[in-house]
Every structure is written in C-alpha cells, then in structure tokens.
Amino acid sequence: MIKAVLFDMDGVLVDSEDLSISIGIKYFESRGYKAERKNFLSHLGTGMSDFIYGTASEIGAEVSVEDADRFYQEAYAKELENTVIAMPGAETVLHNIKNMGIKMAICSSAQRWKVNANIKALGVDPGFFDLVIAEDMIKRNKSNPDIYLLAIASLGVDRNDAIVFEDSRGGVLAGVNAGIRTVALTTTMTRDEAEHSMADRVIRDIKELEGIKDAKALEDCLFPPRNRSLLYGASYIMASGEPIRPEIINKCIKEAIEVRKSAYAPYSKYKVGAALLSAGTGLIYRGSNIENSSYGATICAERNAVTTAVSAEGGELGIDLIAIASEDSPPAPPCALCLQVIAEFSRPETEIILVGEGNVELRYLLRDLLPKPFVFPTMRKQ
Image 1 (cartoon, rainbow, N blue to C red):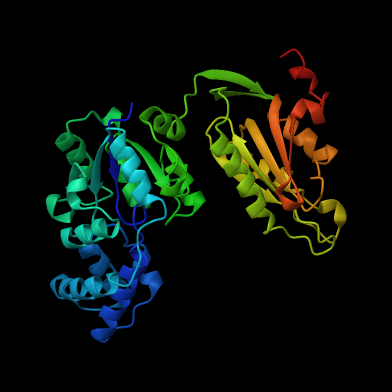
Image 2: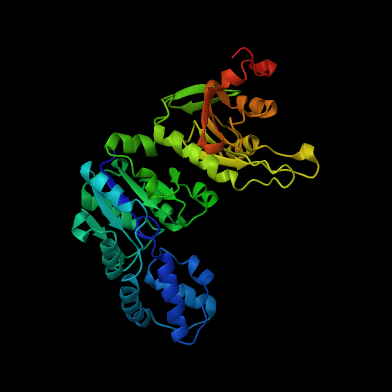
C-alpha cells in the first residue's frame, strides 16, 4: 500500500517550464545572445546549472549561473504575479492525498527559491508537505537516484511503499534507479516517449487522479492488480478481471469523442473515433478512421485503435472495453470486419459502447454484436 508520494514539481504539479524558457530567452537576449525554445528543452528538469550552461553551450554563449540566477529571481517573481502555473486538478489531488494520511514530498531539481514560489502558486505553503527537497540538498541531480533515495530515507518509508510522479525522461530514470514505482506524465514527454521511459505507469496528467479519495483506490488506479491469466480472443493476458470503474468508462468515451475530430474523411465526410481500454496495462489507446482514394484501403477507427494498442503493448493485447463515437443517431455499430478484429483481442463480455449525435449512448457486449466470431482451428479447444 502507498505510504508516501514523491512529486517532481515542474510538469507535474505546476507548469512553469514555458515561463522559465521565456525568461531564459530574455536573459540571453540581455547578454547579447539569441536563444530559442528548442535550445532549452533537453535541459529542463536538470537544475539551473545545466539549464543555463547546457543552453549556453548549444548557442555558443559565455555566461555565468550566478548572473543568470539573479536575473531569474527578479524576473520570475514579477512574471508569477500575473501567471497561473498550477496544473488543473493539482490542488485537489494534493488535499485528497493529504486526507488519506499518505506522506508527501516535493523532489525538485530547481533552486529552493523557485520551489517555494511554485508551492505557493499551488495555493499551499511549503509546510503543507512532509518534506521539500530542492537542488541545494543533493550533489547529483536527476537522472541520478539521489533525490528520491534521500526522500524515502527522510520520510522513513520503504521504497516499495512509495511512488514517484515525473514528467521528464531524466526524472523517470531517477525514480526507477531508486527502485521506486514511477508514474510518467505526458505533460512534457510525448505518449511514446513516456511509454518507452521505463516508467511503471503512464498517465496524461495529475488531473486524472482528481476523483480518488482513498489510498486503496489510488493504488488500484495506478497499479491495478494483475493476478489472473484470462483468455482474450487468441491470447492469454494477465488481468485483474475486476469491474471497470465508472470514471475509466467515462474517460474512454471522452477520448473516443475527442479523437473523432482527428479523422481523415475527405470523401465520405463521415468521422469516427474509437478508444479502447487495455486489460493488461490499464492504458487507453485511440484511433480515428483514415480514408483513402482507393476506398478499400480505408482504415476504420476501431482497427486503427487496435493496431496502435498491439504495437504499443509488444504484440499482446486484451481489450476490456472499446468506445466508438460517430455522428449517427442512433449510434453506429462497428462493421463486421472491425468486430472480427476486436474479437481477436477480446472476451465475449468485452463491453462496446456506441456514442452518437447528442452523446446518446448504446451499450453492448461483444457477444451481442458478434455471437460467433471466427476462431483459428488451433485455438478452438481453448
């Protein structure tokens, strides 16, 4: 059970990275150098020294961290007065975790003055946290594990009872190298980068946890129990087999509706979005329909989501739920070809939710829409 939550700051609880980059650009301009946003990106989350010297090296500038620090403190305090940097949902999540009795620490590579300023921007005081670690308390910054090892030692918790929230590859490596379960957020990294970062779990942002109010629910949400091997279509998948929580169902529906906007349908003008829930990882994968001048080459949204998920999960996939959003009223079901593809990775009780015009919903089980899917002869005894 989770006894301590260790938060990185920028990109997790606050979004001050754009502000920092803006000030960095102004600093180099004030010293006669031209820096661009791209010059700073690989130096985010690694401390002020690398943020300045790393960027300076890229653009051929000669500056000092001390000089930059003075410029930063003055500019940051002034800009922060008129800038909202708290991540949506961050304050609620923090208070919920506090009420669970779970210890909390800030583990930031930033300087202490900036950490304290960012904490206040969250609407709380530094004393709200059980521990605040800034750059001055460690010798080796992320991706070294020092900051997280110091945190669990100071809090008196075992590494197996702690979790880390990070948004950068270096930060994720710091948590993983400390032997602590690490959750990667896609606020700074892309989904693909996050999923290949060695993190134990990937979520979009901290707001995903906003409705969780007890420690067990937090544990189950982030690290669902995977203790049973269940047959999904043609593959056995380690999955919990537990009922899907309403908030996850709603998220799948919202993702399907959102990704429908990305459909490529210049010929039919008929846009469809699909979002499926992986039984093995709890991740949600999306897809939209992609038409082709040679109409037989068109890819339906459902199959697009499935192929994306299979590729991401190493060739094995179990589908617990798939939501499909169209413009029809009533909502349109998958075509027969898509049903067969879905069946390849699903159980008869896999839920299929159809969403149409006016967000009208129809709910089916796979066996309702495809009672007798084709099963390859060698699998028929299973």
